[in-house]
Image (cartoon, rainbow, N blue to C red):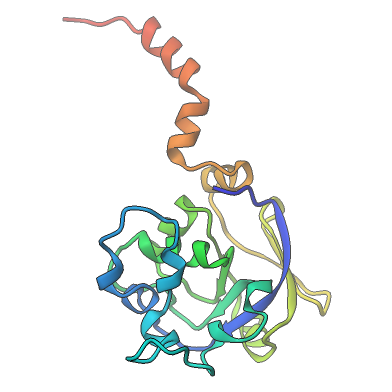
Length: 194
């Protein structure tokens, strides 16, 4: 996982409510157990037609999309079934944060475990972002803040452990590996009762 403390980027906007994980990454792509290259399948049924041609008016096919590290999504983004492949595909595509007024809980938790920052904002901020695609905003994980080009700053919730892991660029296993000596000392000092 790549560390993320603070990042300024343009946004791309997907103003569709109730986007579920099967739309983010269709089920036929779930056979892989690796994250590398899965970004090619992100929104596959919306980005490409039946012959595999790019659908030009889909926001994630826009010229300069590689510069947009933040996806502003409609309400209830990531609903549906639990699949880690959904945040994997977003991160592999180059998205570092999803911003919405509502992000589904399971998707939000999977995102945090995989280095994708779910930024939940108030309705007014969300509406402004939807109306201003390409706006350059700052996501500050350390300060738990989203900064708009208007000067407005809003805070977003992120639990302490997930925040620590994103700031350090580690997942849960990486956290355990960082503490393997402490875990060993704890285990060696335990008294076992038969």
